Length: 488
Ligand code: HEM
Figure 1 (tube, rainbow, N blue to C red):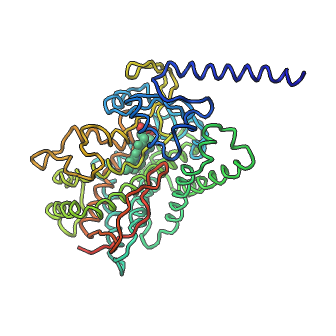
Figure 2: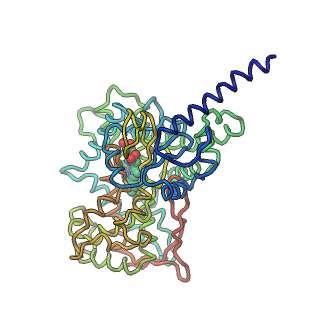
Figure 3: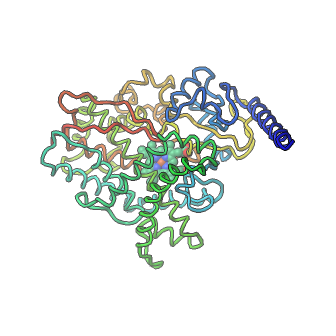
């Protein structure tokens, strides 16, 4: 009798949920067959190869389709629709998910994971602080140039360049810049163990979150993290991120703040302008800026080195332009970029071919009100994925899209950049939630890449091929590979 009393409501609940699932699904853009609870994870999408499943589905269902991961996600793959949807305020929400608990230390805290007025306020503050340190005095650019000079000197001092791992030099170059922006200091290249231990831990945490088979389960069924076996791994993952938060917390607490003095770093600027905000909000923002601001640029530069080592003819042409515009012992500045169209084309092509943020569940957008996309009615709170990864590899304007060919960005005169291709190259996304650190990242990519190619010829190790197959995680990492370097 008791069993029947439990079974009937349970069965009714399940039937009702299944009914709701398929009714909701029927009003959204078409997509593959999905089952409640698991969505398309059982038939179409295999983490971490999200982009492969999405590509296959787009070939079948077109530019706008619904995929269940396991929540319904409207996936968009054409440039015009992504641009129009993302420029609207209605698509600026984020998904509220348990995975965010790792870096969010207070309700709706930080920039990447928050939404609504709090997000807008913190986003504006971060962008204006980056700009204030850059405007007029070009302080941010000076920090990048200083870090680039240190990197080149450090590499140049190494005794044997015939088998060199560039990864750590690039990583310190980038990590130092965001460290100085947030906390006001850089580490010397030969004494940066604290920073590098911490960065190494962070890499493991990022790889862990995207490669673990348990993460999609926790993502789908957040309560699963309380099951003993799953809880053990969830705690391990949390501890890895906690190390970053501890680092950020120690640095932030150590910073002296005098309200009568001009701030020289983000933490001081935050304390001056956000007196009513909790320390946890400062920590959330700093952790996210540290995370978003270093692995992304480092990985892009590492891809740049691999692509240029593989395509020596591009590297030679690039170096020729660099040497014709910048003195040998000078570090590039952003005013040089205007005179260097081929360099601009190479950076665009590196970012297009090696686009590092292919799909990241944390970065999906959420429509905050009922809206219309491509003629379909999309109810409030539906998730949207602007699939610019695929767009940059399938838009008809990118002829022969798998080829690494920077010349595609140049008009017939060889010096004018093709606007229609540049505007479709959107590794930083587009619209209201476009990367908040884009300006800094572009400065780092230009000055970092130019400094390396200006000073070193980068080649594969003798008898070895460059391997361009990524390690698929939330960020597409290159496989660790050494180079043969020659000083120029
Ligand atoms: C090559 C380097 C970089 C790439 C490819 C990149 C890419 C991205 C992408 C794709 C997004 C998601 C945008 C969206 O949701 O539509 C994003 C967001 C963000 N990025 Fe970057 N990023 C880079 C460097 C940086 C740097 C250097 C910083 C910090 C100084 C930074 C800070 C942020 C922040 C705070 C957000 C969240 C913006 C928001 O949600 O409003 N990023 N980035």
